[in-house]
Image (tube, rainbow, N blue to C red; front, side, top):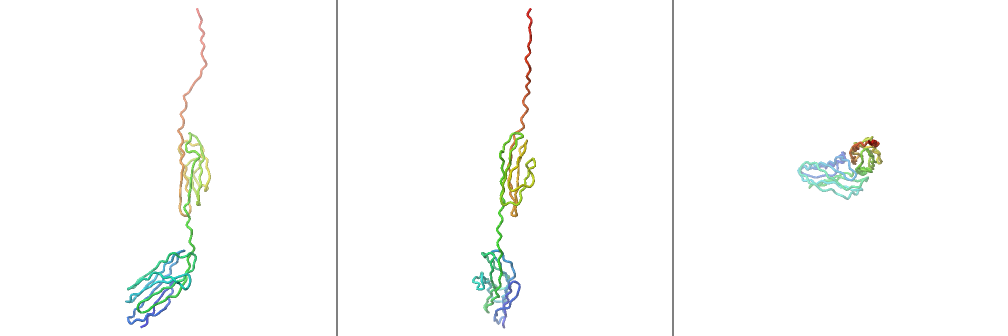
Length: 227
């Protein structure tokens, strides 16, 4: 009896190859459509050995000459199988086909193409640094806070005083105004990858005590009369 091997590529079943068997053994491989990434692809399949150990694999390459093989897998019972191929070039057309063989013969699938996408360059986390011209002030003293960031799409100030909190430019400076207590100025910068923060604390000396009062009086002159 003649039994055709079924090879399904990207959802379309193509009847190719012939296994000749007196036992009625057949093998079916089925490659289900899987989108490739920019540098890899996974081939999936299904095999029906029908009593005969059956070897399955995929052939692939950048032309219809193919030239590369995935690892071979052997199945004795109905099974799903898959093969991950890494190290592909981005934005490149590849060709592949499914293959199967057992003691009754071979099956060769139709060559089908796919194209890898362009790899997206990961966006690095932003960076931000904040500092103050002076970090130790006298009571009611003032200083300038400065910051700069890289790879940020937004920055936001928090804590602080005298109007510091709120949206910030990616770099700049801010005059603290008179400070009467220790104060921390914080900034958070973000992008699509994540966010980072930094802060600077300015210490303020206690309010000085009032000095003791001093009163100056004119001298008193006393005239003494002699008798």
